[in-house]
Image 1 (cartoon, rainbow over the protein chains, first blue to last red):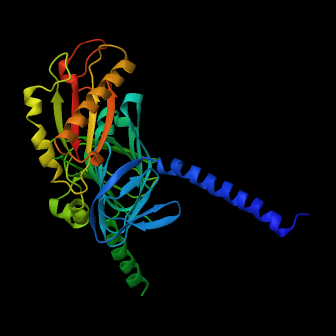
Image 2 (cartoon, rainbow over the protein chains, first blue to last red):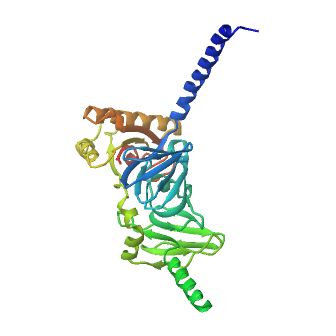
Image 3 (tube, rainbow over the protein chains, first blue to last red):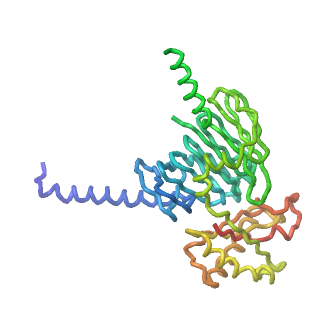
Length: 156
Length: 197
């Protein structure tokens, strides 16, 4: 049995290793690519990611799988392929999948629109591969053929 | 009494119908009109005329036949949403003097306009994307397009554009302006697109 004093360096070592592993893990997180940037905010809008809820401001990044929601406010985003999505009050949308790498033939954009009002304006993904863009809602799925459309979903 | 309750329910029910689940096709900003297809377990509906709307009662009931709705109706439901729409991105197409890394005079003359456009966009970003025609292998073209894009990025930075706003990418031969068969030379497809958004 080691004395407490002998255990200390061991514990410190473990703590250091643990800390190091956290640091090393961080870049993987940071490397997650931005898919859109907030361009317009009126009132308040929020992003839900990694079980955190953060208020969004102009210039902030949106990542794949983010949920964006509003209560009284509205928000507009421009995606890296030039697609634009804005939502009005009491709305909730998730950008479940976004891949924009034409040189590698990787194109997909899956939007899950749960409730509220939304405007979608297509970008390069829809132009290059119309089948790659889908908007899923609780009542129907929208296939997009290079266009601009509005949706209203009552939700629950 | 029961009858009153029934009429009340009917009124409330009708009021709910006024909103509900709707999908409305709009004209694009350049005036062109695309198509949306709304589908669920009950069926599917093509909407291909501006301001045409289809309603969907539930996941198992077919979308309704499309009907044109008024601009006022659109404003009432989607006014705030439309107001929050970001500016349309603006794309500048730059071409090179054949067989060189030099821009054509016309393309070079566009550089000030690119720098000017950036000031119009909140949280502006600039994507610089290289493209080739289909002569040569896909991998070689992906590389070549990237080199062209990097040359333009350096030029924009030299002109005073903040390097932090720029992302560089290559679409190789996979995003042509003019569709061609493989191995066909097409000067219009050899380009760099600079998009301000």
